[in-house]
Amino acid sequence: MTTTILDSTQKSIRNWWISILVGILYVGIGVWVMQTPLESYISLSIIFSTFILISGIFQIAFAITNKSDMKDWGWYLSGGVLDLLIGILLLTHPLMTMAILPLYIGFWLLFQSVLSIGLTFQLKSFGTLGWGWLFFWSIITLLFSFLLLFNPIFAGLSIVYMTAFALITAGVFRIFLGINLKKIGKKI
Image (cartoon, rainbow, N blue to C red; front, side, top):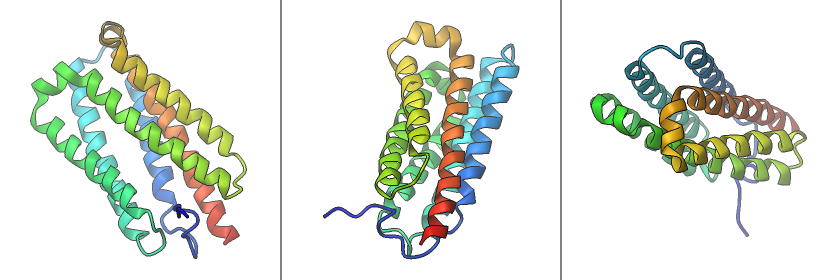
């Protein structure tokens, strides 16, 4: 029998607020990107690179602080390490980042949305109300990732707005996830 993160929890999930903080960060950067469409493509690549780096640090902190409470904490650690490494790579190679930014963002959002979809089904099996909204936002983020990956001309023309919308949807998911993690901790 497979054990999920929620099945293995014996007490409150600590630092549930990190998910909300990451979600607010996603939404804030998404709104900023949307409000400044005329900013240079370079600034978007630097901000995105920094954002991925910070997101990785927060995810690693969440995984490490909950490792004794979650059997599947390694997946969160892996996601955080991946974000951290991608953030470092993007920051150290700005010209490469600008050239392939739509692909980086697309693959990163694809990974995040697949992880999010898995979490929603874990929440559903745990009996969490509102899991459907989490699933909805995960699917929206997944669709944005596919748009970025499979339509490079469209992505090149509208990368600023697509990135903004994708970050906002991913952020909304993370905020809802943090709220639900807090509620789960109260049930246990």
